[in-house]
Amino acid sequence: MIATFIHRAVMQGIPLLFGSTGEIITEKSGNLNLGIPGIMYVGGISGVIGAFLYEHNLAGDPNPFLIIAIPLLSSLLGSLVMGLIYCFLTVTLRANQNVTGLALTTFGVGIGNFFGGSLIKLVDTDMPSITLSKTSSYFSKTFPFADNLGWFGEIFLSYSFLAYSAIIIALLASYIIKNTRAGLNLRAVGENPATADAAGINVNRYKYFATCIGSMVAGLGGLYYVMDYACGIWSNDAFGDRGWLAIALVIFAVWRPNISIIGSILFGGLFIIHNYFENLGMSAQELFKMAPYIVTLIVLIIVSMRNKKENQPPESLGLSYFREER
Image (tube, rainbow, N blue to C red; front, side, top):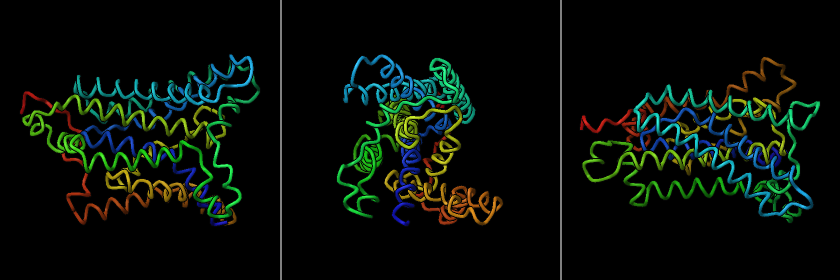
């Protein structure tokens, strides 16, 4: 039972890991992108559109490469467009980052529901959903020998390639941010863009690049949710508040992608733990659903009380940079 719970917690946490890693990369540049929920939604529906067009134009067996590559590239492209919109508004036009992010979330959910509803009408089904079982079967493939290794296989080896990719991306992002010159420049832009600009660092380029990369990473969380966790089934408004949990996870991980790996599993477990207390009644279940947010608040209080520089957000987070004021 414990192995099954951990397995489910990891699967539940992978979309959060994608979203939080993408947001950490973005925030390290000083951009506070509250549009992550909308970007994850667009990443999911973009992958669904790509998979839908490919599946419904098949004449025979699917090509293993194309059935993965098309939804993957579609998801990355859709998320990239959302990141570019955010950057154009906040970096080029210097719009308020909080308002832009919230507008992007509303816009992303609306785009997803519009295209999702359109595809549902095309398949002419009685159910308000789209099922992409062929694509999902490829995205959810695991190691064939995992079932033979008992609890070890269930906990460590029974996930799809996107799940392992999320962990690799988080570790790679952590290394680049902390140990490379590009990471140093990125942190400089997030902490004090005026000083970075004076040192010859192209502030706008770093903000654009980090935000677009972060958006594409976050979008993969939406693709994973649909193609793996939800078994290829798209339903409008089925994401819930996972995007907001991903943003909360950034605070929990104190802006470190490697810590967000552990945090995503913990949040995934907290997200589903109410299912194991059904006998306590509806009121108790609702209290358990609050657990991820309560944990985030506790961590935020502890971090604020300790007041350690390395555990604080970038100093210029959420502030537009006006070069003329340098």
